[in-house]
Length: 247
Image 1 (tube, rainbow, N blue to C red):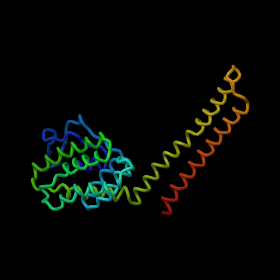
Image 2 (cartoon, helix red, strand yellow; image 1 turned 180 degrees about the horizontal axis):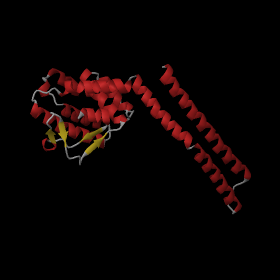
Image 3 (cartoon, helix red, strand yellow; image 1 turned 90 degrees about the vertical axis):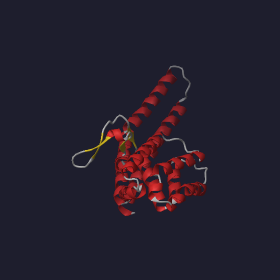
Image 4 (tube, rainbow, N blue to C red; image 1 turned 120 degrees about the vertical axis):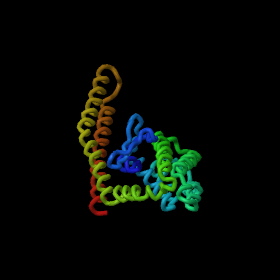
């Protein structure tokens, strides 16, 4: 389940015992894909980092991730939020593995984030609900299962790949593709500006009062904005290249 959610961003969201079977090779088979969940790259990073933060007891990092994702408004204190998260995380490290529920920890975490004005995230609610079911099924098979130890290699591998050099190159590639798409739209933007100027001139001829100086000023503003847009796009491309190849 965690591999699907964190690695693939796509998970079965109705994994009760009636939907799970074991085939002749001992592989788990999930049926009935009527309820599925999706997580974007931002949500997967959020999930991986908060789980890893609880595993390593780095509550400050867990708090920072919430702010970086924009889930908690910036007027709140990172330190206060980290202290609240610590109150949830610390008690689990003094208890046996079979007494610790990952799903309940996440539930408490979401309740605390509500106190810090974090808006409800539909995709995270579905994830938390599914984790409750998955953990319950796993505990029926092995009452002493340590979900935190089980999750650690999955979370660590994802973070290593996505926040390491390979991940940075892939992120840069996604940004470059977005940049190229923006550059491809520049002719359309210029054409739209020309159409606007033409409409203004036509309106002026038909009685809409705009003097020649106003029309020329609008034209200069549109041209300047397009030039600055071009420079900004090329600057972003240069910065991405610097990050990938020289940082």
